Image (cartoon, rainbow, N blue to C red; front, side, top):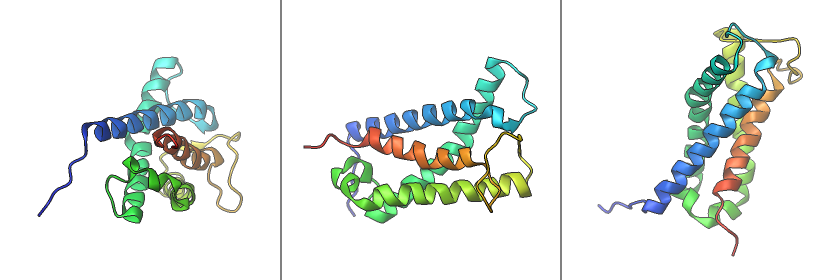
Length: 155
């Protein structure tokens, strides 16, 4: 049995992607806080801690699912190190489509089943589904941003 090792630069690339993902999701969470009814104490530090935990606990989990989906698609755990995967349309079509489905599923469960949070009246809703538009856009746009950051230079 042969094992393929990820080169040190591969681990750095993956960790960089996780860091970019975390910072982008945490920033998005802070930006959309006013669209939720929140029992969080007002103030920069409590909001930053709350949003940082949401980004680490939920958003990075969904990003991991997206990474695994692409690993299965390309039959390689190291797909993000291979330039061909970034030139393949599946990367750019599946990522936002599955990201939107994950976000919609999670929002439906969190808002209407588990009652984890409540939308403020200012939250724009996805028609028919009645889930927040901004969390759905978050799982469409942030993963695409991360892909763009991770994409190797075009030669």
